[in-house]
Amino acid sequence: MQFMKILAIAVGIMGALYLIELYKKGYRVRIRFRVRRVPSANPVESLPKLHNHLGKAAVARGEALQAIREGEHDKAWGLLHDVKSHYLDQARFYGMTARQALALDASVHKHLANILRKEGKHHDAMVHVLYWLGAANNPPSEAESKKYRAYLNRCKFNVITLNRALRDLFRLRENPSHENAMVAFNEWLTEEAGDKK
Image (tube, rainbow, N blue to C red; front, side):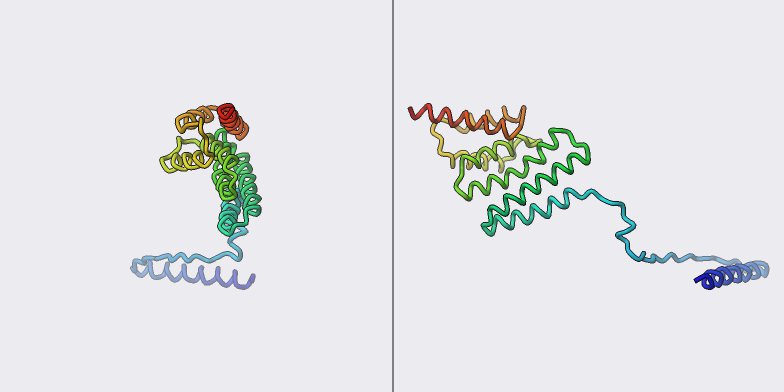
């Protein structure tokens, strides 16, 4: 290897001396450099260590959605909680605000609600929908509002109207948490029970 380096230097010096001789004879030499990219032995080793919490969350989310499609709800439930863990690791590592971390965490509850809906547990699903939409950074889109209405209709409430449910949703947005979503839903259940007496 040492010999090759010495040889390359010697060839370089001889080439430079030849160019000087040509220049003395009146030739104008135009030198073109061609740069070639030489791959390293292992390009992954040269990269900095990444904290790829979102990538891990995306993989777990994809597996969870596949498990939901296949009817493996217990497996999907566990994978979605893995997604929540990866999201919280992401929030902690990058110093997200509490509101940003809540919105990231709550986004998983859309899929948890879907699992509960498929199992016929509509009241439990509605709590998750309340938290998902209540903790989001933006107001519900038209599609999300339709989904909210559909989940509310599945609960078959007599007293709780859509306007009341939307009012409680926007009240929840002031101080979002899963516990506050459960409190709001329990208020609905109490009102429904009072109406039946």
